[in-house]
View 1 (spheres, rainbow, N blue to C red):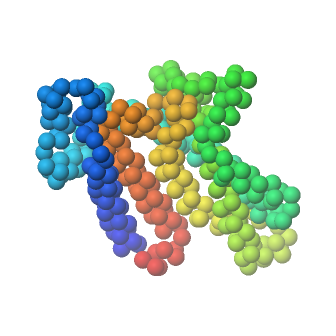
View 2: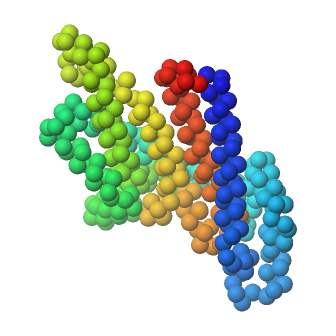
View 3: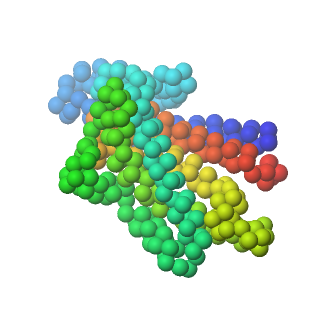
Length: 315
């Protein structure tokens, strides 16, 4: 187990370093002067030169990369030129919205998908199974932003139950804040629930073919008892793996949904920074999202290794 943990930590560190290298390199080869893009083509050369100096663009590329990575390791993500604030403060404020949104979407996804997957597996080839598979096909085919638009039209425009967008802030109370996140969470959760339901169905079907499940049935246990006591716990390992991957995706992939609902989350910060050519914010947020995805994946692998003895043996 110690060797497995060591390898995972080394892989995490190497992947995070490669993420910084790729992001920095990609933004370096993008055509155009970032300072000129921010100030506009009519800017005076002296103003452009001053901004280039402020951004450190007049220094050699290796020096800028080392200073950037060193600052991130110290928790210093730089200062946004658009907001005139430390990027770390902006990220902390936006994560206070994106993280609860991702958690709500993950809980909704699991709450919808796991029961549906068990129902489909227990009724293989029948109407319930076909209905769940159809839900899976539709959920995978329809993007989350389209679900977001439909939810706004149905529950905001017609019924008026929810706001069409915006966020009142946590200072307004947990109730109003969580209510503003419900529709975005549902829009994010539905495509993920469709994928997870299919994974749960496949894992449950594999478990239903095991000898101990046949023994439990032969003893006369009710189908519901067999599903909940024997099938579900043993089918949760692949489901837990997908849940971890989904959580990482929900954090990094909420850009479009946050913009549809005008939520001031991390995704919207990245979208605005790209539109405003705020290079410092773009670099820091993209690397942070990449590291969060890698970290969540590593934690999922470690959790599965702790639950399932087989990875320990392979390690």
